[in-house]
Image 1 (tube, helix red, strand yellow):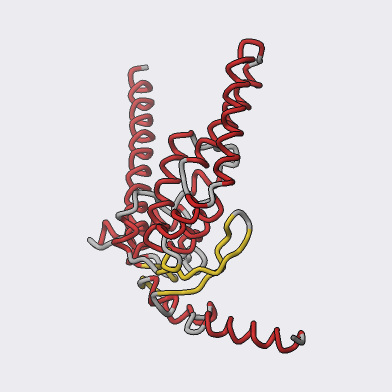
Image 2 (image 1 turned 135 degrees about the vertical axis):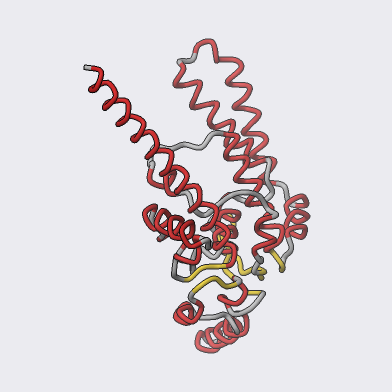
Length: 262
């Protein structure tokens, strides 16, 4: 088959697969808070999903705000963590995040379904077997030599054991779960990551004065789930600010009180 003919066939198939997907250039029509399905231009989409860095076209379903809420309490708004380059999540925190991501994958994968993938993995468990073998060797090595190891060496081996143990606890690769969660939460089309702490504080303050929701005072392109995140986070920012102000005011009163006694 000639190269030109093959390219034409591939192009036709891709056009068929990607038909109906809203172009990102169209997203200015969806300012405000809208369901992800509306912003993307349809409930189902064929997307190149990474599986251990190998991209595979899968049909994904756009989840609604209620479905995302039922997956857990993870938020897109993690400004303090993202700013702290030295932050390292604990093992329990990683488990919490992975569980959330897996729940997202269960409702988002349509073709294949999550159950289809689980069955495929169980039938072809070569990688899992290799991981189990690697874990067993590390554990045996650690138990045999831990009395001779420094604390740094112990931490390195224990960290490797935790990583492999984490990988074995979940069916999908880490990059798959991270990508699907990112896509399902609309992080490629939403302005949620652009909101500053000052904007949250201003929105919450205005909402308190006018008896409205903080999300009423933040403009941009957001999913309906983002609205929930914004309202919850903005209230938390305001409460934190008011506590800090109270501490400052108490310190001032204490200082002035001590001056009067002098």
